[in-house]
Image 1 (tube, rainbow over the protein chains, first blue to last red):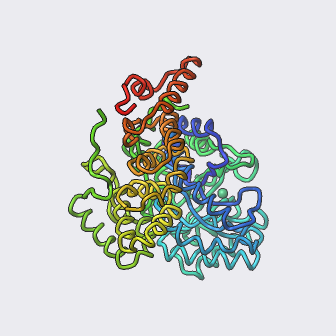
Image 2 (image 1 turned 60 degrees about the vertical axis):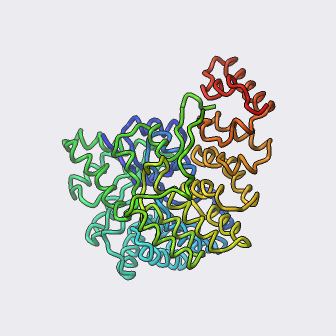
Image 3 (image 1 turned 90 degrees about the vertical axis):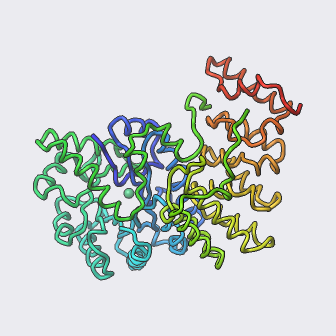
Length: 289
Length: 205
Ligand SMILES: [Zn+2]
C-alpha cells in the first residue's frame, strides 16, 4: 500500500511515528501550517515555524524515506490576534518556495469578521501565487461554517477544483461535492470521523475528488489512520487499485496542481540514504552520533 | 588524496537549455538585485533540478550564480547585505546555495555569521556546504574544529571539508582521537573517515 498523507502535523510527531509510517507505506506527506496549541504572540514566531516546516522537518522526513511538503498560511484561530496580522505580509515570500504546495490551513474557527478578512486575502494570495488552497472547517457550528466557506470561495472566484475543504463529515460532505471542491476527511481515534464511517461515505459518493488524512498533531491522534482506512476499504470489498486511487493518486492530483510536488526520489524508489544523498552530501547512517 | 572537486558552484555551467533559462533570471537580478529572493526561490522550477555532470546539482549552480550576480550588481558596499538577506529569507536548499557561493564573492570575513548559523543546525546539507573553502579561509580555529567534528557526528564524509590537511592541527587530532576512543569504549563503530584522518600524517604539523 502506497500512501500520501495530505494533512499531517509532523512537527508534533516522534521519530517512532516516522518509522511506523514508513513501514505502513507512507512515502509522502503534506504538513499544513496551523496553530501550535500555545497561541503565538509575535510575527517572528511564525518565521521560525515556517522555516522549520520548509527546512528541518523536510530534512527529518527525508531521513525516514518520506517526501515532505508544506502548506503555508495564517491559520483562522490566530487570524483573530492583531499581533499576528503581520504574518500576511510574510506570506508572498513563503508562497514562492519549492515544496509549498498550497495556501493553508485557511478558513473559519469562530466565524469572526477578522477570520473572514484574513481568509479572503489568503484566497487572493493563492491566485497570485498560482497555488491550490487547503480550507479548515470549524469544529463548532461546522455546517454553517462550511456553507459560508463555500460562499466565500465562489465570491473570490477561485476554481473549485483548486480547493479542498477539510475535516468533513456525513452532514457537510454533500454541499462540498455539489460545489465541485475536493472533500477532505480527517480520520481520528475518537468520534469526529472513523474508518468505518469513512468507508460508508466512499461507498455512497465514490472515490473522485476525495482525500483522507490522519491530521495527526499533538492532540489525541494516530498517524497510521490513512493506512487503517485503506485496510477498512479492502475489508469492505474495495480493490487495491481503489485504495491507491484514494490514498495516493488523489493527493498527487490535487497538490500536483501547484507544480511543486517533490516526488522524484519516491518515484525512483530510492532508499532513504539515497534520498538524502540527492539533496546534499552522502550520509553514512552508521556514523550518526 | 581528496579528489579535486569540479569548478565551484558559481563557475559551473549547465546544459544549454537550462543555461539559457538561468541567463534570463540572472539578467533580471542584475537589473534589480531586489528580485534576488524571488528568483532564488523559483530557480529550481524555472532552470531545473537534479545532478549536473560536474558533480554539482543544477539547482545549486543556478542559485549560487544568481547570488553572485546580485552581489556583483550591488557592488562591494552592499554585497554582504544582499547575500545575508538571500540566506535569511531562503529555505534550506537556498541557504545551501548561498553557502556554496561564498568562496567566490569577495566578502572577506563578512559572511561568517551565515557559516556559523549553518553549523548550528543539524541539517547535513547545510553543515557540509558550510565547511567549504570559505570556512577554511575565514572560520576561526575553535569553530572550524567543531565543524569538522560535527561532520563526523552527522555522517558527512570529510571530503566535504575544504583544506582539511592544511588546517588540521594537534588540537583537532586530539578531539578526533577522543571521539574515536569514546565510540570504541561504547562498543560502537568508529567512522572510517575519523580513522583515516588519524592514520594520516599531518602534512602541516
Ligand atoms: Zn490541521
